[in-house]
Image (cartoon, rainbow, N blue to C red):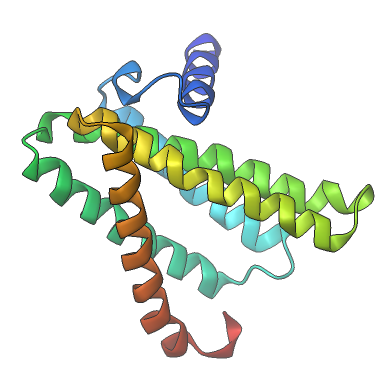
Length: 175
C-alpha cells in the first residue's frame, strides 16, 4: 500500500514538473474519492493551523473547486473524452494537494529564514505555477497542445475569480 502511495506521489510530482500527464494515474473512482477526501482534509488542517485562513475560506475554496471541476468536465466532455474525467480529476486534485501542502509549509517555515514579503513572493510563485500545471493536465486529457490547455486553465481561473467576487460579500468580513 505504501509503495502505491509513493508511486502516486511521484507521479503527481512528475505531472507538476510537466513530465507526465493524467494518463499515468490509475483510472479508479475509489482513488479519486480518496484523493478528494485528502484534499478536503488538507483544507481543514489549514483552517486549524494557519491563523489567517478562516473556515469561510474553506467553504469558498470548496465551491470554487467544484465550479472549476464542473467547467473542466464540460470542456473535456465537449472534446469527446469523458472516459478520461476520473484520471483528470484525480490529477487535478492530487496536484492541488501537493501545491497546498507546499504553500502551507512555506507559509509556516519560510518566515524563519526570509522576510514575510519574500515569503509571500515564494507562495505566489508556487500558486502561479499551478495554472500551467492545470493547463498541462487538461491539454493531455483532451489531446491538444499545451497552450490550448493553458488558455482553458486561464479561462477557468477567470471564471473562478468572478465567482469568488460574487461569493466573498455574501460571507462577510471573515473571508
